[in-house]
Amino acid sequence: MLVMGVAGCGESSNVSDRSDQEVRADRPPAPSADHSSGASASAAAKRESAETAVVNAPSAGGVDRPPMPPAPPRFSAAVPREAVPEGVPAPVDESALDPSVRTWLAGLEAATREGPQEGESWLALGDGMLAHGESAAAAVAYQGAFAWLPADHPQLERAGYLRAIALEDSGASEEAIDILSSLAEGSVTSQVHWRLALLRSANGDFDPAIAAAQRAVELAADDPQPQAALAQIASEYGAWEIAEQAARAGLRANPRSGHLYGILAAALRARGDAADAETYAGAGRSSRADWLDPWLANLRELRRGSGAASERFYEALRRQDLAAANHALEVYAEAVGDPASPRLALMRAQLGFARGDLVTLEPLLVNAESEESLRCDAAAVRAMVAARLVATEADVEPIVASLANLDCEGDQNATRWELISKFRLAQRRWAEAAEAVITADRARDAGVGAAMRSAAVAMRQARAFAPALQVVLRLREVEPLAPDVHLLHATIALGSGDVAAARAAAAQLAELAPNAPATQQVLRAIEQATRSPSGGSPAR
Figure (cartoon, rainbow, N blue to C red):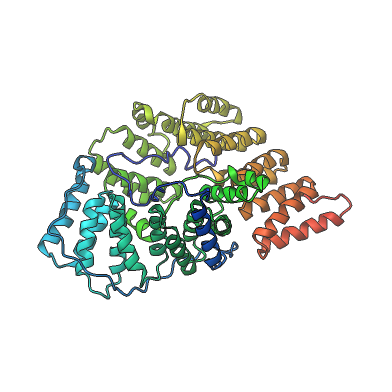
């Protein structure tokens, strides 16, 4: 029997039921104009003023340790309290919410009517509304929370902040700026300042935007978010020196950010360094900036309904928490209310495979395949089941052929090729495995970096250095400032006997993580290989 390490494949990462809306307040405000050229005299004067006045932000540094969480808020409320709202507007589109969500939100609203001076009830309603994308209703509810929570309540600042988010998401950006400006006067919470910076920048107020972003960096230098805000604002402003410094600092903490690589490339191009700019122009996993912070991220835990249950199911399946996956599956089944749902059948089949229950999956997969959008995911499960049951490696070929002939798009296409790469790795067909995992990486916006790293390590250990190099060069292309990628490149080159290439990769590693033990270890190995008669040392 051919044992395949493919558990977890076949999961679509785009599984949310459209009946349950995403939180919409985490998107960045769109700039109102293009300020990147700095062509006018006034823009040049402002840029010179900003670059002169700017205080160099603390380096994100610490590439050898994970980013520190933001410091806990110590907030003194000096913001005027407003009148308590008389009522909360109904959700924008109740038909877009699952019945269970509508019932839950109605219960939260009823609590505010029963205790109209209970600030925590208003806060709970605001959280529930914003978690389900109902920004207008959330803004009113947070207004009630801010009016009735005690001045020393630990959630008071969060209530004001999320009200500003809800207002901005509803189109009331000026009011959102006013609220955040008042909060910022007494806040040591980084996201208050960088969110204010983004809104001010979108409004054309670049000097105060730069100042707010710099304050955010001072409060959380190891967090890539304030660095990203500063880099974006400076790039819109044409302050390229500031933009480059902030982008590099942000990339030290988050070397996967296509958003920051794009800003860095623009900054290098602006100073005439076209060659280096080209290195970073196509790097990163996504050019979209994810303006997330703990307060918004925590709202995702409140989401209910079929979409939220589906997300939690796949998250649990990825971390192999089968009990949590089963619980989420049952919640999803109850929310959908249709035992014959093809999506439900697919999820039951995926959980069954993870449990090793291969015999009962066929009827579920037939049901799932009845829906066109699920056929690729169902085929992936069917392929994994077949791989578990085949007697020889030769029997794998029809399975791989069936996957290769599927017509899949997006994440499903990436899943298909990632699975093919795992089959080829198990067969020790290294060149085909390299081609498949790189194809998977190109097919998914977020990439398959973990799969590529695993494939490169397996190839290196098997001394299949040429395909391993092919994979690691793709990793370098999309994550050029990730220290572990340069470490992997150095060890592959060293194992193949190419000491010069190993030394070049190690030099870049030393720039990114000079004090990391792995850096010192690979430098010593290269020095030893240089002195050895053969000139190379295989990696073990």
